[in-house]
Image 1: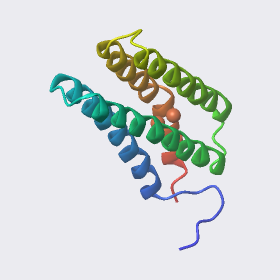
Image 2 (image 1 turned 90 degrees about the vertical axis):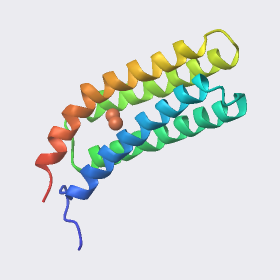
Image 3 (image 1 turned 180 degrees about the horizontal axis):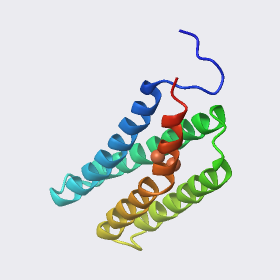
Length: 132
Ligand SMILES: [Fe+2]
Ligand SMILES: [Fe+2]
C-alpha cells in the first residue's frame, strides 16, 4: 500500500511505543547488570547499546514529526538534542568515576520518564490523529 502525504499507519505509532519499551528495558538491564555484578564490560556494552538506540529512536520520532507536519517539531527536536548532549556528558562522568551507578540509573530513569510523560505523550496524541 502506498502511503499518501501526511498520513501514517497504526503500525508506525505502535513501533514508536515499542521503541519506548526497548529504551526502558535497556535501562532496567543496566540496573540489573550493576546489582548482579555482571562486570564493567557488560555494563559498558549496555550503555553503548542504550546510547545508540536512543539516537536511533529520536531520529525515528523526528522523521515522523516532519512527515506529519507536527506543529511542535522545533521544541521537541531541541529537547532531543539536549537529552543526547546530557546523556553523553553523564556517560563521560560515569566513566571518569565522577558519579556512581545509582546517579547514572536515576538520571536515565528521570530524564527519559519525563520526556515520555510530556513531549512524547503530546506527540503520540497528534500522531494518532494522523492515522489513515
Ligand atoms: Fe521524543
Ligand atoms: Fe520517544
